[in-house]
Length: 129
Image 1 (cartoon, helix red, strand yellow):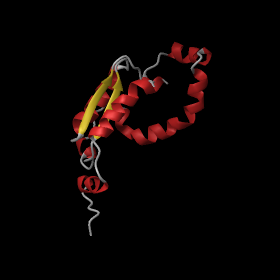
Image 2 (spheres, rainbow, N blue to C red):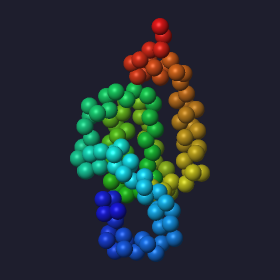
Image 3 (cartoon, rainbow, N blue to C red):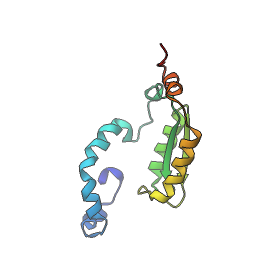
Image 4 (tube, rainbow, N blue to C red):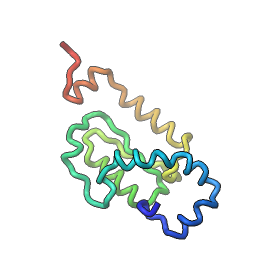
């Protein structure tokens, strides 16, 4: 929890918070998060060439009440991706409510609907023989 900037006193008090039960239930997923994110959470600029191969429409979302570092990181990622849409969920934290996220996802997937061949073409692999 120190890695995401929580003060030590808050970390100590977390065990008494009602949400701790839910957080503990998903704690086993944190190593996967770290593996996927790799070195992209160390405060350094994102390497531009890492995202060159991403050609598909991408939705990058952040909660409006999320910490500044989350806004900065998601904005930087959206700026690097050629077909990205950046969206701030007003009033939401990192623990986004499904009712707030669902309409944004429906809108994105409705506008970004492509066929398998379109996706293959975007990724540089054609399914045509």
